Length: 109
Image (cartoon, rainbow, N blue to C red; front, top):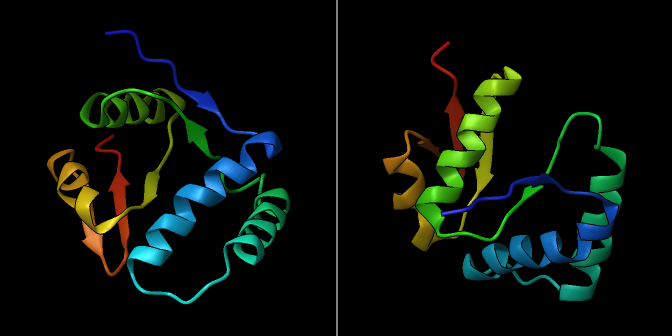
């Protein structure tokens, strides 16, 4: 299976906001989609030095494995995932631990 993982850019903000909005809506947050997208795009723009989004299209387990391998290769200390409730088990199987709504992975090295 070919997996391509790429760093997200400002051009991806709307799609990223859609994924994040879906998770918020799943939790019952009463947020307007357009307002959320605008706020999220602004946040991505102002946090690009410390929060780097990555995107890929692949089955979930393969995607998580590829992202974690890239994180190890880059020496990343931890990976944070904002997940839908139904995807939590996928991340836990990959070694993430659950902290409230946030799943967090730390490199063993």
